[in-house]
Length: 174
Image 1 (cartoon, rainbow, N blue to C red):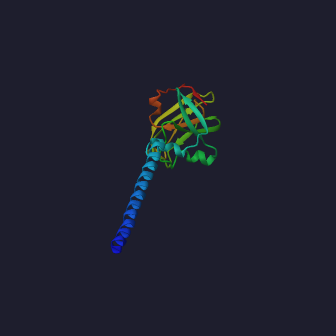
Image 2 (cartoon, rainbow, N blue to C red):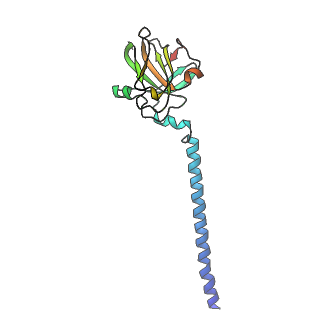
Image 3 (cartoon, rainbow, N blue to C red):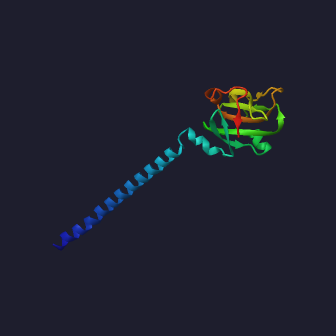
């Protein structure tokens, strides 16, 4: 009889180790599921992922739509603009502030997506619009007319001008 008891005690740890591995596997699956749910809800796999690459320096409102806007801070920022970035979110923008009103050309160097561009006067009204300006246009530049000086230029996702039915004279608030 002692031999049978020895066999029973040896088989018990095998069952415990199997259930231990099963519990570890279940825990791992649950952990991976929780991480995936968190990533999906944070927008990593959607257009919202574009918001991760922009600062929110100021809010700009046009036709009731609020844009989280990154301001260019240096001349290097102004030259680079949105170049090298993968996308721009629906409510994202980049604003360029110039030292004085004038005619300013914008190019698509190193751009990966089309944009709409708005030239904005000193009194914060749209004086020029370039719709769906594509990366393939580089090295050509789009610019406002000399007789319609701009102090600011705002770059947004392509299609925004049509979506908001923007036109010359539309006020911009910031």
